[in-house]
Image (cartoon, rainbow, N blue to C red):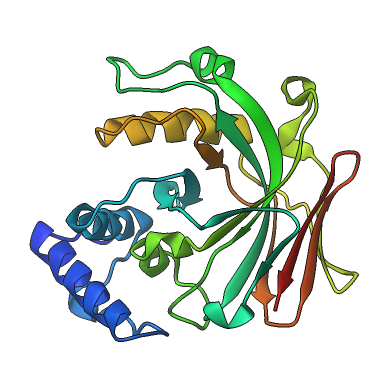
Length: 251
């Protein structure tokens, strides 16, 4: 396993990405001298960047990459109800993900020992099916450690129908598909994350960073199905049979 980046390398990478973002997209590769080789280092770079100009989150995404959990916030304007329309040219490379998300109905402040599974679940007000549409702002094939340094591509979260009686459903195995212009391009994948486990871990990881999860925030929990080829002009539907559809137009 490669050595972790030093704090100086993390700051070097954060400086590079801040300047590159200001210069426009796509982002150039992070220099090899400070390029993250794992998602944990990528996350450290992102949080260095975020700490320089912190903005309040309205939702959170979690990704487990190579065994490392990486978090990124969504900000005001990034969370949209279905059916939604987003200009396709806002993306360098649009990734489409079918996911399960939760809205919390109470505040979760940092606490000794963390919040238990039951405590977190008791505070959930709603569960939803959603489209998460990350933007691989580097272009090309995703290099996830570098994407982690860019908020794992945090761009848009489209919230669809509620999942009725979600506590009594097997959320890990919900059948789902991603359809583009009426054609199925991806279906529920093996090895998908357990939404409840990701939710609980995310609440506690946010707390571990000294932050409080606010009432009303949404936490989305990773791809049940994934398609990396979203483009302008596509009509996207994510279907969860028996629950409903989430719709996105990439104009």
